Image 1 (cartoon, rainbow, N blue to C red):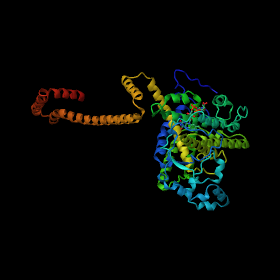
Image 2 (cartoon, helix red, strand yellow):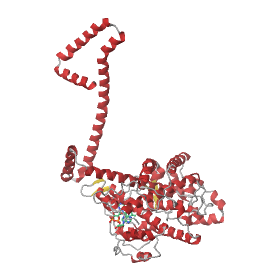
Image 3 (tube, helix red, strand yellow):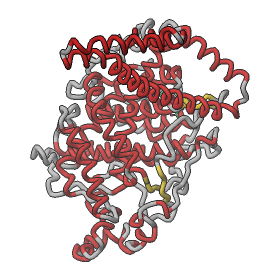
Image 4 (cartoon, rainbow, N blue to C red):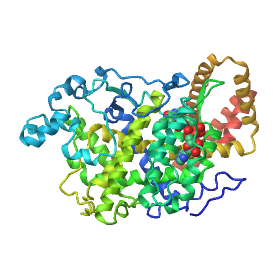
Length: 554
Ligand SMILES: Cc1cc2nc3c(=O)[nH]c(=O)nc-3n(C[C@H](O)[C@H](O)[C@H](O)COP(=O)(O)OP(=O)(O)OC[C@H]3O[C@@H](n4cnc5c(N)ncnc54)[C@H](O)[C@@H]3O)c2cc1C
């Protein structure tokens, strides 16, 4: 494996190398992904911010027990960990517990038995509601995630816009321990096992392991199979994305102000080339999953209570996948699980089970906000893996997984998780760009006005009590808008004034030329003379102003 060495003088050298090929992709470079993302991110933003469908996520966030032995005394450090729950009255009727409850008899255990015994019974159930909830019989073997049963009384709706992913203060040792447990799920290297993965769960200790697993894994990656590498890169990419988000939406605890923290990003992500690579890798994997959805869109229902909204969401998703489709395929799922059929199938089963364990580990995350986004993102990646490895490529009529008989079935929560996870990664790539601009801005020689502004900022942060900061921020914001609007308006007025005045000064010439009549000339000359007398000789101030304006018009 080529080791990348960062040059001390330019920490951005690696990230800015647009030609750098992302390992385990089809020759995708950093530049390719940035280019694609520039086109896709506005669509993702629109979809995730402007549609109820993508905004409300139903899950069991508070009442699911952690299956693994952990230190129970974990409390997140700040209010930022809290999650605001959405009242059911704010979500569309069809998603309310009342409506979902109508299907209770069929969910989820019973549905399996019924489907097994009599398929026709299911056909009587309202079709739209069915697809919102139904756990299909054949789906269980294809799941890469434990998805919460939406009929569970512990499930709540959460508006993702009201609960952005950001810094919460959740940290070591608990958070770090969870990450270690997540990475322990990476498929063990049979040729050279060094860590007994399952035994770590039983220890239940929060003590860090004796050496950094990340380092060992990166060194040993060449010896891994492609399946193992993909598994690890997805998790590491998700980790990098979470770190990028928390550093971009960071709370400065001494000033109480939210904003990007460049040092945090440089420390957690930028200074580790592999973490950056894995972020880009995870993006290309999601890109391909979205692309593969293209051939299956017609079979999906978006379970809205109005056909109109269903069509609207479908159109928006179609626009997105069609945009994805215009770009090359940077991840090729057909090179995985290709060996001897029995072995490959066993390997895929193992892959699935390990990923499901990762999803179950999210219930152990000790901070509500982090748990929310952890659950969404593992569900999102789980859905992507399901699309990639369990569903035929309809568009290209390639069925390397022999699953032609089973069409793609996705629940609402899976679609929402997939699109929102893609949006997270897309934003992370945009944030990297913004961090770079911040870095460039900070390392450029300071202009005088910037110096003054910075010293004012410094003074405010030092001497004005923290409670006034949001107020001052608002004042600055209003002042900026006022200043901007004032200049816009002033320029319009000035432009009009300039036009009227130039027409007026042009008028004598026009009269003279239009008539071509030399006889009128004395009148024009006379008029101009009178005006000169009026303005130039009797009003000194006005004279100066007009001469300035005349110069400006010229
Ligand atoms: C599921 C989950 C979601 C979280 N969400 C949030 C959140 O929304 N907001 C928030 O403020 N905090 C969140 N946290 C906590 C956050 O991720 C960090 O754990 C915390 O900020 C402490 O960071 P750290 O720098 O000590 O190392 P950690 O990020 O905890 O990393 C632990 C170890 O993992 C390795 N590592 C780090 N990054 C990578 C990578 N990309 N790939 C491979 N290995 C890596 C390193 O060896 C590192 O020492 C979350 C934690 C978890 C487990």
